[in-house]
Every structure is written in structure tokens, then in C-alpha cells.
Length: 76
Image 1 (cartoon, rainbow, N blue to C red):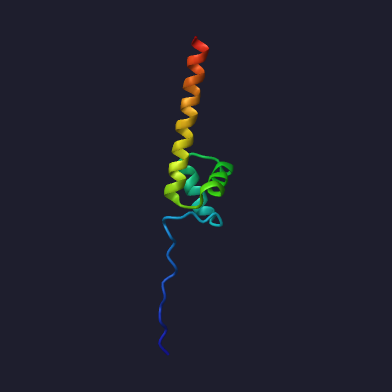
Image 2: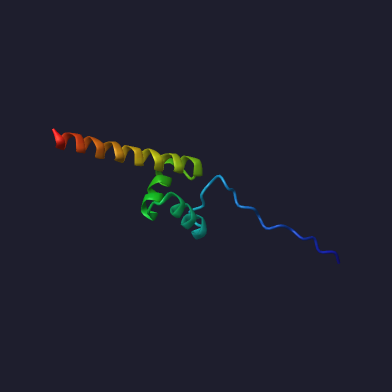
């Protein structure tokens, strides 16, 4: 009897699978965010890695702008 070897399924590299602890840990470390923040962002925009990265950057920029504005108002 001839056995056909089949490859294991390849992961989709453009989306995040929250059920995969390895993927979640990798993305959290790369983006330097907490698990709660990652879940919140995925609930908000979906599981696209590009969209998650973009949202993290937008949130960081917004936080920096808020800090800069707070600094300007306290100097006045």
C-alpha cells in the first residue's frame, strides 16, 4: 500500500489567530503591548496583522500628542 504524505496546513501569515498562544505571544512582544490591549484592538478592528500594527501606531501617536499638549498647557 502506498502512503501519500501530506503537508501540515500552513498558517495564514496575514491574520492573527487568538486561539494560538504562540502567535499571540509573538505579536504582543513585537508590538510591545499587553494581552488586554491586543484583545481590545482585535475586537475593534479585526484580526488583520497589518491593521493591528496600524492601530497600535495610531494609538501611540495619539498618546504622544496628548502628552505634548498637556506639557504645553502646564508651561503656560
